[in-house]
Image 1 (spheres, rainbow, N blue to C red):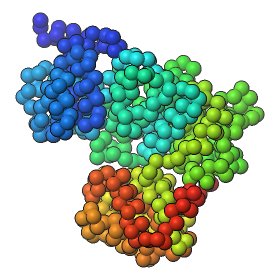
Image 2 (cartoon, rainbow, N blue to C red):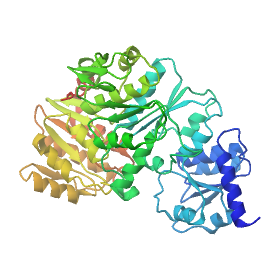
Image 3 (cartoon, rainbow, N blue to C red):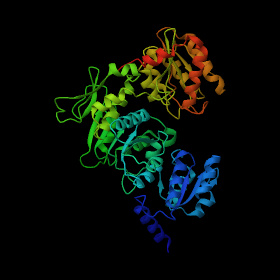
Image 4 (cartoon, one colour):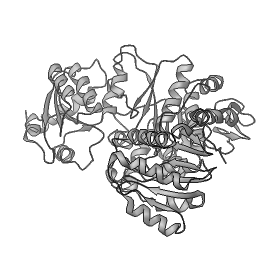
Length: 517
């Protein structure tokens, strides 16, 4: 067969692969990466009968062994150049794990060779009917994704639906799709990396019941190459939405995404925010979280979801957490969950570790771990929840400028302790915007000593009424395994320093101060 005819036949075959029960047998698929996502992709495809070649710079020993058992080939290679084995394999499609940059040599080779590139989300959508074709709810944003996904899944489950939080939250969507018990709804957290590869039209395009981009701020610019490319990836979340496009009224970028999105007929734009909601909105009125979208008389009335007074003792009253609650409520209301169910489910909900987590209260000083604040936008939300802050900040800035963040919050700072290898820009920003502010640098680069030194420095200047806040505004991999490791080491250092002085019970029960302004 002529090469052009072979290419046409391959495209036609890929277009027809829109079901688990389609004929995937013998399809040649290259899988780029062998992390959690790459392994789930390879496992799925071999189960479908495809011929699978996995490419990875390195391989976990257990995963490599299992690949051999299930019949997938593994090629460990630096991948700084395209391996000859990939070209000779002649893949009909390449499925890329989220961590590989768009300009990676293998992805550039695929583009030049005319090999289609999918992500794991497209594959999961195509085979979503293995057990039961669940509804999908999509969640993205620079910050708050995981909390919003967990909230939405909790609300859905409280209403008797089988709901799975999955995607970038840590559980591959393919694992949820293949779960033998099946689900009614998948609440899918999507990173900008995953959205980059997701088509908005054609057989691989997702058609979600509801979708949200919680917020948009510069992040991952080293991966996407520009703020515009990052925003364009995030905007894909709204494509083909069927019931509700949920957006942040305080973030014009998300409103513009909804206005520009190609959605299905009948899909509604639902705004959320900390201000008074209009019709078709969720918001806050005199301390009451309200739904003015999903009721017939929405022009003259609202439904009460909960109150800030109820949320505060549970550590859920910080402004950005309230926004997450409103967004999650909007998503599940689109799926028919009553507001009473949401209210009751919030009674048992707790934030994950390292998300504005109270560590200790001693001598009138509160110690808070928000290690999950891995970019300036997340750190800003955290800082706004407190009035007097000794700020532990720094790490890998990922190409993002933190100057504006420092300038915006010097008024609430008592001191700053800078950690991480990207310290120079942060120190310069503090010197520029707050030359009188007590400023400390942790120059130690040893993982074991960074947090004890940072905590000791913070304790040397913190006074009664202050909050010592770990909100790094940066990634952690320069000095720690991940943000959770950074947070755990902060906990250990605080407790080691305080000894028997820490009142953990009060810190946990009082929750996080602050409320929407």
